Length: 117
Image 1 (tube, rainbow, N blue to C red):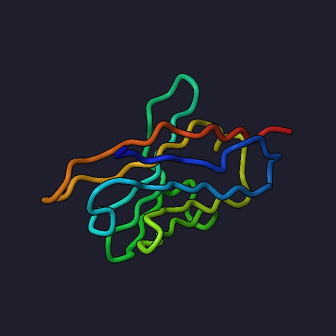
Image 2: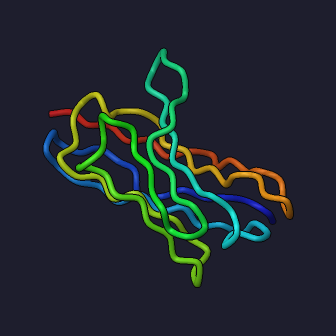
């Protein structure tokens, strides 16, 4: 089945860390840009971090220096290492595989991250 499956979410105290994983069984994974989005309660989904097929990365200002996106094309996986977590980081985190000339885009089902004391 063609899909993206996130894991690694959970409840963590402020200042804590989590590592999200996204396992891809999608075509042409290594060629596609990969992104992490999040959606807080009552808010729109927002881009958090992105990584190109070549490994270039992008972060929104509020997570730069705290989050690290990486990918392992040998495992068809993308990761989001989150440190110094804050309550405002709470939300459902989604993995997204961007469209390429070879394949359509894909969304994962999301994993809940809750930062609370």
